[in-house]
Each structure stands twice: as C-alpha cells, then as structure tokens.
Image (cartoon, rainbow, N blue to C red; front, side, top):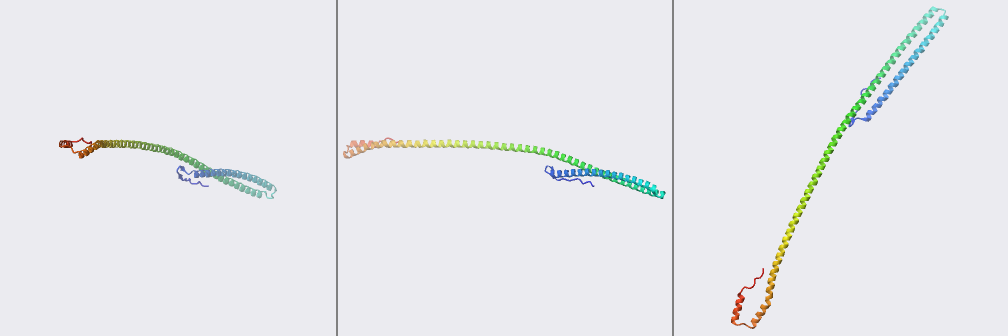
Length: 257
C-alpha cells in the first residue's frame, strides 16, 4: 500500500467544487473502511498463524510421541533417537522461523495499514478544516458583497429619487411658466381686443356723428329746393336778391366730421 498524493480541487465562484469535494470525501471514507477491514483481516491472519503454530506444536508433540514409540520399538535406539532429535530440532526451527516471519509480516502490515489509516484520517481532517475555512471566508466575502450591494442599491435609489424630484420640480416650473405665458398672452389678447373694440366703437361714433350731420343737412334740402322753385317762378326784387346773395355767402352750420 502507498500513500496517495494530496488531492487538488478546482475553485468555483463560491469556493471549492462541492460535488468534487463530496466525491473525494466518499473515496476517503471508502478507503478508510477498506483499510480497517484489511487490518481486521491481517489480525485474523495473525490469529490463524497462531492457530497454525499451535497445530505445529501439536504436530511436534505427535512427533515426540512417535519418536518415543520408535525409541521403544527401534532395534537401534541410539541411531533412531539421534535421527528423531534432528528432525525435531529442524521442525522446531522451522516453526520458530515461520512464527517470526508471520509475526513480523503481520505487524508490518498492521503498522502500514494503521499509518495509511491515520494519514487518510489526517487528510480528511485537513480537508474538512480547509473546507470550513473556505466556507468562513466565503461567508465573509458574501457578507461584504451584500453590504456593498445594499449600499450601491441605496445610492442608486437615492439618485433615482433625486432625479425624479428634480424632473418633477422642472415640470412644475415649466407648467407654471407656461401658465404665466398663457395668462400674459390672454391679457395681451384681451387688451388688444378691448383696444380694437374701443377703436371700432370710436370710429362707429364718428361715422354716426357724420351721418347725423349729413342727415340734418338733408332735412333742409326739400325746403331749399322749394324756395329755389319759387324763386325761379317768381323772381324777387333787386333788394331781396341782394339780401339772398348775402345770406348765401354767409357760412353755414359746420358738418360733424
């Protein structure tokens, strides 16, 4: 077993990629479970090795019994005893060697598995701590961003309200100016109409006065015409003609103009 290199995650707008982090955590948890199962298997193998050692001890005991039997039944006790002792020592040496190798191998495997488990747990803790730190930094950044956004929104609202107020005031001023201009034009038009009406009335009065003068003169025409007829038919005496000439040369009544 070998220790895996540190996992690198891609950053997103809100920190690490959540799906990648969750997937890697699941991989670490699965590997941790696998290592724990492997440690348990190694311990079971160690127990089995112990069982094998017990079986070998039993076999040695059986060999000792066989040696004892052979020693009792062998025609050459010394040779048989020597041979059995040699076999027994060899079996004991092999058993000791097997026990030592299996124990060392099991202990090495257990130590390696425990080291990898500890490394995986440490990496898991570091990853969780890094995620917590990233989350805290992200929350701080989000709070600062929200604060800036709220301030910018308030500023934009204030500017919009100020623009609306200015536009409303400008519209009010324009309306007041238009009303004032309209009133002034109305007053001017009224004055012009009154002046024109006054002039018209004055001209009408003057014309009527002239017509009145003409009418007065026309009222005298029949009498004057009758007098002329009479004078034509009945010529007056010389003294009367002189008097009439003087009257005709006298200025008449003024005609109203």
